[in-house]
Image (cartoon, rainbow, N blue to C red; front, side, top):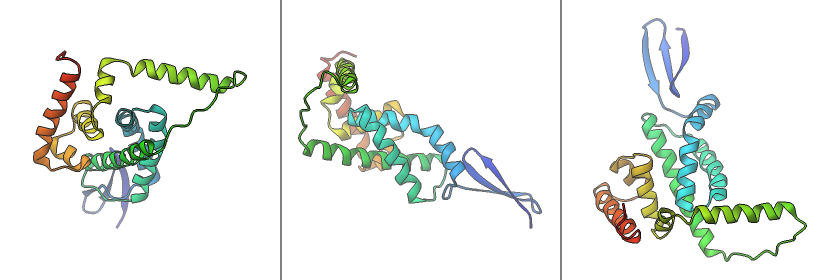
Amino acid sequence: MAHDLVMNDASLSVIDSESNTSVTAYGPMDEDTFRAFYERTSRAVWVYLARVTGDKQLADDLLQDVFYRFFRANATHEDEAHRRNSLFCFATNIARDANRKRFRVRAEVVPIDPDDEDQALRVDERIAERFEASTDLAKAMGQLTPVQREMLWLAYALGSSHAEIAEMVGVRSGSVKILLLRARRKVASILGGKR
C-alpha cells in the first residue's frame, strides 16, 4: 500500500493511493510543520505576551520559551484552532509565571557609565518605552489585573471565543462574559468614561 504525505495548512494528510481516502491528523508536529505554525502564530503570541507583561524585551524571551515548551509537549490536537488555543494556554501560563517572578524580585539600580554606548542606548530605549506606555489606554491597561488584561486581549485583539478564553485563562466558560464586562467597565472608569 503506497502512502504519500501532503502538507495541507499545517496538518498532515495521509492519502492512501489504493482507496483514495484522506485522513487529517493534528498530531505531534515534525520540524517543517512546526516552522510553518511558528511563522503563522509567533507575531500574535509576541504581541499578546508584550501586552500581558507590559515588557517587550521580556516578551522576546518568553516567546522562545512558549514555543519551546509547546513543541516539547508533543501533543495531539483536534484541529488548527485547538492547536492555537493550546499555544495561547502555554503563553498565558508562562506570562503569569514571569509576572510573579518580576514582582517578587526588587529592581536593581545600575549606575550609568557615560563611556558605555550600549548602556546609553538601553537607557534611551527605556525612555522611549516609558513614553509609549504613557498613552491613556496603556495606563488604563496597566491598572488592570493580569487576568483582566489577558481576557481583554484574547477577546478583542485576537477574537477568541468565550469558551477559548475560559480554557486559556483558567476560568469557567459561563464567567467569561461577566468578567469581560467588569474589565471593560474598569478601563472605561479609568479613562473617565471616554470611548
